[in-house]
Image 1: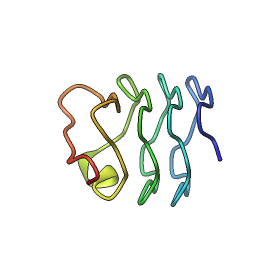
Image 2: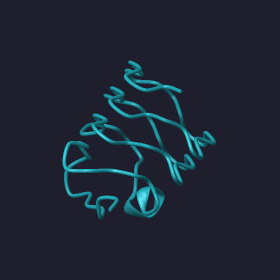
Image 3: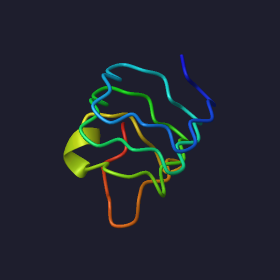
Image 4: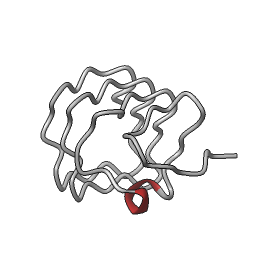
Amino acid sequence: NLSNATLFQANLAGAFLLDTNLSGALLSGADLSGANVANTLLIGAYLADARGLTAEQIHTAQIDETTQLPGGLRATPAP
């Protein structure tokens, strides 16, 4: 459980974060290149300036309107 964690500029490239709770986490400047975030809880997470995150990576992640994604990145919020 990494909810509300501060992961400022963390190197998470290639990390296996499947089913991880990152709700409310601060991922400012974090490198998420190639990270597996399938089914990861990203509700309220700050990812606005995270690096390497793609729409394909977060396709199955759980997000909502409070999740701050990098500019230009859009995903469908979880029901």
